[in-house]
Structures are given as C-alpha cells and as structure tokens.
Length: 275
Image 1 (spheres, helix red, strand yellow):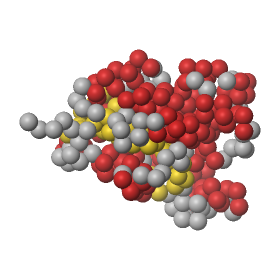
Image 2 (cartoon, one colour):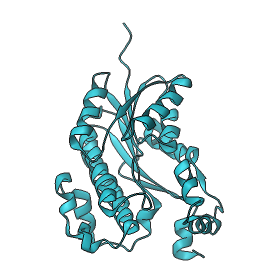
Image 3 (tube, helix red, strand yellow):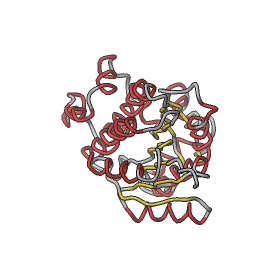
C-alpha cells in the first residue's frame, strides 16, 4: 500500500503561485484554489501537463465557510504540509471594501484556519507586497491591533473604517501591512504545532496582471518605478519562487514570522533615491 501523499494547498491561481508550487509539489498532491474556477482549472492543467498531481477547487477567501470547505476537501486526501497564499485583488481592480475584505480579512482568515490544521513540520508562505512598506509607520498599538485582533473583529478596527481610508491604494497598503504583522503573530501559534510561516513582499513582478497595468493608464507610473530602482527592471515570478523555496524547505528551518522584500531595490529608491 502506497503512503498517503502530503498535501500542498495553493490559494490564488496565478503566475506567482504556480512558480512557487512547481518548486514544492513534486511527489505530493496539490490543491489549486481560486475564486474563479476557470483560473484554478487553468493552473491545474498546466501542473498536470508537467507531471504533477493537482486538483482545482473554487474558494472565496473572504468567506470562512468556503475556506473550511477547501480545508476539508484537502484533508480527505492527506495531511496539509505546505500552504501558499498568492490570492488578492489590486488597487486598480477593486473597491476599498473588496480590498479590505479579500486582501486583509481573507489573508487573516487563511492564516487562522490553516494554522489549526498544518502538519507538524509544515510550512506556509503569504504573498504580501512592497506597498506595505510605502505608507508612514503606524503606532506600536496600531501594529499590535492589526497583528492580534481576532479575525472576525478585524474589519471593525477604527483605523480600517472608510473615513480613515483615503483611496484604494491606501486600503491596499493597509492590507499588506496587516499581512506582514499577522504573519509575525501567527508564527507564534504555528510554532506550537512545530510549523513555520513567513511572508514575501514582491515589487513589480511580470505577470499577466502586471502587464495589463504596465500597458494601461498607470503604465508610466510602473515603468518609472522599475527604471529608477537599483535593479533597473521588473522581477519575474521565478525570482520570487527562489525565496519561497528557501522559506518552505528545510533550508529555511530557522526562519519564521519574517517578511522578505523582493522589489529590486524600489523601496530603497523610494525613501533614499530618485523615486
């Protein structure tokens, strides 16, 4: 009788998640979750055609019921050893309310629920964003509230009320700042299970969505950002996957609760250079 495979759960069926999954999924079964089943099917087919054991799943990360359904489905196949969250919406494609519900609350929900079931020795990685570094520092108390407020009460926080959110970019920055703080706090809880979780904050990474932005009305803004960064170019999904592979593997066994900024130096240029 063959041993049951470990389960890798990827939420967010895009190029970033695919690149990370390909590094980690061989020999295991991967569940590909996305709010659009067609996206999950597309990434699943790519993985299957490359020899991986993959299955698609429709999931809405802003719904606790939907997230729990994904976990139950994955658990029927084996223990969840790796969790990858690359889901989210962008400032140009969503409202303030949607960004806070998906990117902020949804990520907190995933960290909560997968932290309860991740196997001993398991690992997780959350994709945040360089945007979390671009806003002014919050107070220590505000950071603590973002990190530790019970998930179901997060969107009731005063700093997240509509009157205190300027626009969709500000909402996105708050969500990504919250992702990083949440990972720090959750790393303590995951550690009680012998598991680790970290986040990655990418800059401009070439994906179909990024190409839409670069060729759209905000294109000059994006082109200026990577032109004036030390790297002088945008990044690729595989460069993010290089770091994710470290964090999700044995080589990263002493790394948990950390965030890794991968932006070609754009944030450095924003504060101390020509940006």
